[in-house]
Image (tube, rainbow, N blue to C red; front, top):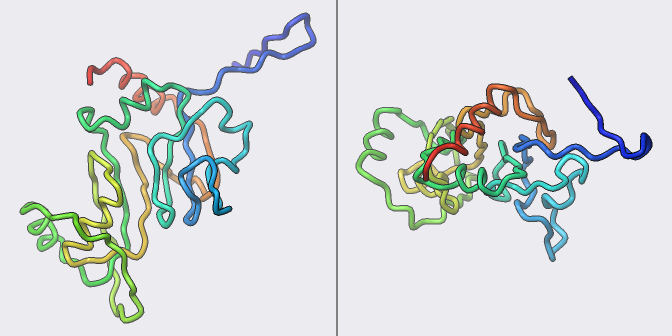
Length: 193
């Protein structure tokens, strides 16, 4: 049911923003609200869609995918705090033929993440798709883990955060939560960090 509130029957009172909104960030958009170098950034998005909201975390300039916007600072903290173990699922396109058992073995032994994870791939003759689920999201962590496992990343997309997925949301588009996703988000607010 859609209900509007008016002052003196003439001026519509703006509705509060939803607690979360889902955005599919395209590649080559900075996860900042403005950029002194003039690069595309989140501050250029439709103000009506994201009014009184802030991005939850960030995605690298050369990464794409699910980026949440929040109107609740406490919920943002819950989503980002590692103690809450909110899963983030990424799909990476990497150089090389990935054998799942081999990659699992490498990852189970622990991977140093000192390397930056950048790649010049002009000589790549084989690519693989890797799905990786993490509960923390440090700077370029997924790229560095895979690169230091011997599989440099040439494309990275976040597809899921908790139970929230991109589904068929096109790059550059946004949507509100489904009732199930909203219930999950509100349940986070009840958790102790």
